[in-house]
Length: 320
Image (cartoon, rainbow, N blue to C red; front, side, top):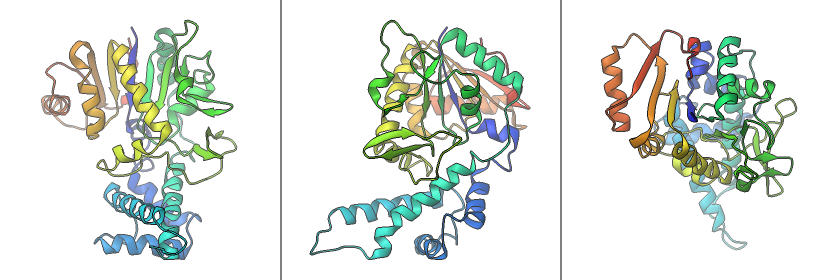
């Protein structure tokens, strides 16, 4: 039975909630990274203070402020001419400065020594090999990706999962099944710092040799801005299109370690629930199961779902 498995940031939170919390990443990069000089920090600070925020980004609401400012600067710069300029140099530089910071925040989740438990990875990989199920991720860390690469599940056209990136770069046509292939899709729905554009070609950098190049292919912002960022990225637009196809052909939808707060995702899942099994695996969080079931029923506007709560979600092995 082919499924679509959607992973949230619960994987990292189950390993180390302090390290994998967004607020920790934002502060760590601001204080310890050399990606921003004092002039760049001052630009971001002036943007945040103008909206009544703090002295550095401290959550998705602050990232939303930066995102709106980037859009405004890029629009004004796009209508400028040789005779008329709408922005000072600082405004022209702001989109690059902001993306540099956000990209480095995403890289924070790649630079660690944490590993998923071997038993968890083995059972998941066995299930994917057997069923050719699809995997979609919302998190920015490389926990699943690293394991899939080492297990040789993700890769070229003959692997169990493909992500549309070949040697010549990304193209949506690379996701098309041909010659009787029945592979699953590996979809980074909110992007990756590995995805960059060079000379009009979308490429995926190798983990081992990747450079911290600012990228537009990252949905690291408030929920209200996420659809706009997705629509502005060729890669992410393709992934969401194929998520729709993956859900359509799946008999089961498995939601793993997801907060349930992304309405654009919830609406898409809801549109496919009429004939699907919906299974949700989450941390129990000392919250009554009845309360959590009602929460999920409200999020997806459904009456039937299978809720599995565990003290440690990484101990879940029953994928069948």
